[in-house]
Amino acid sequence: MRLTALAERYGTPAYVLDELDVRHRCRTYAAALPGAEVAYAGKAFLCRAMARWVAEEGLSLDVCSAGEIAVARSASFPASRMTLHGNAKSPGDLLAAVGYGIGRIVIDSAAEIVRLSALVRRRQRVLVRVTPGVDAHAHPAVATGIEDQKFGFSLSSGAAADAVRRVLAHPELELAGLHCHLGSQLTSVPAFELAARRLLGLMAEVHKRHGVVLGELNLGGGHAVPYVAGDPELDLDDFALRIMQVVRDECVALRLPEPRLTIEPGRAIVNRAMVTVYRVLAVKGGDGARTFVAVDGGMSDNPRPSLYGARYSVRAVRAFGAGARMQRVTVVGRHCEAGDVLAVDVPLPADLRPGDLVAVPGTGAYNHSMASNYNMVGRPPVIGVRDGTMRPLVRRETDSDLLARDIG
Image (cartoon, rainbow, N blue to C red; front, side):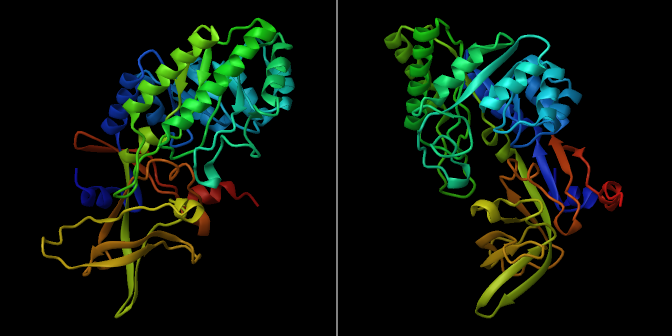
C-alpha cells in the first residue's frame, strides 16, 4: 500500500493505522503473560474499529470517561472485560459505567466511594488505586507512582489502607483488588517489582485486619517504546518473567493466595502501528540559517512535542535516489505558535519541496486522542490498512462539523 495513493484518496494530514500490527502486539502481550489479564489502555487511542480488534484478540479494555465508554459500547465491547479509571470521575462517567455494567471501577478518592455506593443498582466490583511511592524516573508530566500528585491513595500515609476500610464498609461495593500506575515510557523492571511488593504487602495487611482476600493485582502500564533511533524499550519477556516470579515469591512469603495479575499496555500496543502523513507547504531558510519545513498539520494533530518535548523521526515519502544530499531541518506545523514544532534537527533530502509528502512514524499513542481544533483546523482522518487495502476508520473533521457545535 503506497502512502502517495492514500494521500491522494484521503488527503493530508492523515493518520494511517496498521491493523495487523495492532493484532500482533496484542498477541505478543497475551503470549508473554499467560494467565494474566492484558487490558488495552484506551486513552492511548480508541475508535470503534480499535475496540473491536482488541476484543477479538481477547484483551480487556480500560477507559476513563463516558465518551470512551460510549465508543466501546457502540462496538459491543464486553462490559465484564472493562475497567473505568480516572482521578476525578464525573457523575456522568460513573452513570455510564454503571449503566453499561462495567466489570470494575477503580476508586481514586474518598468521594467516589460514597458517590458510587449511591449509584449502583447491583454489587459493583472495584479496585483501590494505590500510590506506592515508587519513582520510575518518568517525565514529571507523566509520573504517577510518586507521592504528592493527583492520582490514587498514598500507601505511606495510610490513606490507601483507610480507603480499603471505607470500601469494605459499603456492602454495595465488592473490593476485588488493588491498582497502581507508575508513569509512562518506563523501562525499569525493578520499579514494577517494588510496586508489586508494596501492593502485595497491603494485600497481606488487608487479609490480616479484615479477613478479606483480594484476588486482583493491577500494575498498570506505561511500558516504553522507541520513537527515534537509540531510544530504550521495555523488554517485555524480561518484565513478564520477573514480575510473575516476584508475585509468586512474595505471595509465598506473605502466605497469600496468588492474585490474578493485570497489565495495562496502551502505547506499547498501538504506537508503532501508526504513521502520520503530511504534505509539505513551505521550505524556508538555508544559506547558513536554520531550514524550516512547514507541513499541513502540527500541534493540533500531535501536541506531544510541545507538551513533553517528545522527539520524532521524519521520512520523505517519494524516492530521492541513493545519492540524494541530505540536510538537517526543523519540521514545523501550520499553527500560530512558535512552539508548533514536530521535529528538530532531522535529516531530510536537500531538494525537498512544497507538495512533497513526509511521514512521521510512531504516532499511534496520544496523537489522535489529544488532537484539537486549534485555529479551527479539522482533525485528520484515521485510515486503517490491512493486506494492502485501506479504509477510513474515522473520517476527516470538516468545517460543517465545527459549525454544528457553534449554536450562538
